[in-house]
Picture 1 (cartoon, one colour):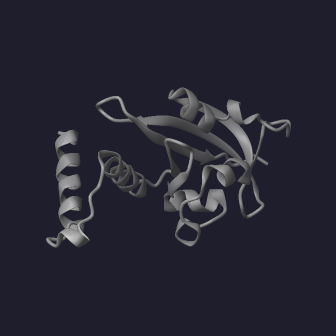
Picture 2 (tube, one colour):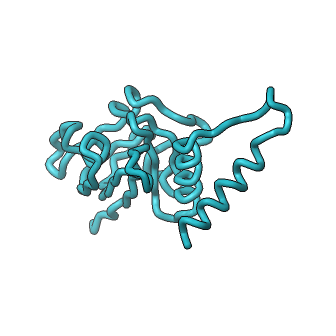
Length: 159
């Protein structure tokens, strides 16, 4: 049932963006449609979520994630992997930097398997937050990897 609903939604999207004039026609690849559907899914969640493409470019954050990351997606838009990978200070509970290859996002990207971890992160707003994150690969029904979804929670201190 879910697959059928996704197909109907994707067809609706395609009907809205295609124009009869071949010069104005916009073709979307299957990966483009999968990304649109993933963004739609994330935008309807109250849980903070961000999405990266298969090479690590930040392609979407939902409204719930904006305060925790320290920026609004509408103001910055998509961010390249080079900037995104170094923009946030990620440390363990002792304050020691967590190597990139041990961070959940990097594991999900490089190994295409889910990863979970608790860590401290300083957002683009300069505020340090204790975060718990689960990152999982986005793989379509044909086995094609097209990105990673990261769901995360701000852990409120008991102080």
